[in-house]
Amino acid sequence: GIRCGDPQQPLGPLPDWLTAVRARIDASVQLALSHSRPSPAPPIWEADQLTVNEYLPGQGIPPHVDTHSAFFDGIASLSLGCHSVMRFAAEGDKSRFADVLLPPRSLAIMTGPARYSFTHNIVQRKNDVIAGE
Image (cartoon, rainbow, N blue to C red; front, side, top):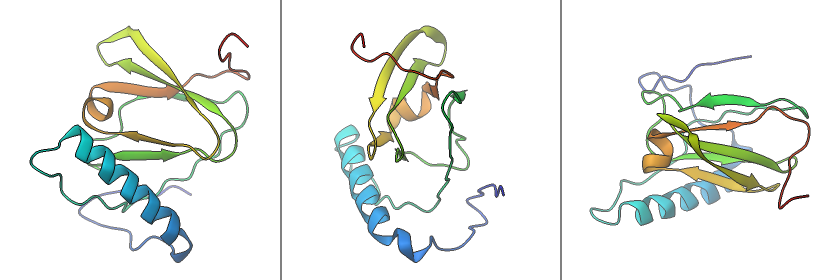
């Protein structure tokens, strides 16, 4: 099912089984935010939402910037199953892009301009070419 997030109407606490994973994600995003904005210190970041998606080989994610009103600065994306390549592109100039390899169990953290000024997507294809292979 689908449940849309609204910061004014929280859905309740995250499940207990996520406690350890959430703590590691929270610490990682907090560190990323402190490097992107060292002064003044950023507010404490805590994951309060979770989206789980399963993508089959060949499926992709269209280019997008996550909703500003439902998600604040600091978005974390945890890849679990297999590697993937996420493409980041300047919102006004799609010819400027970077492909980033996300190995299994990797955490991509988007803050600042990466969060608000660049789209991110997974190109729809069955195979990725990495380092010419």
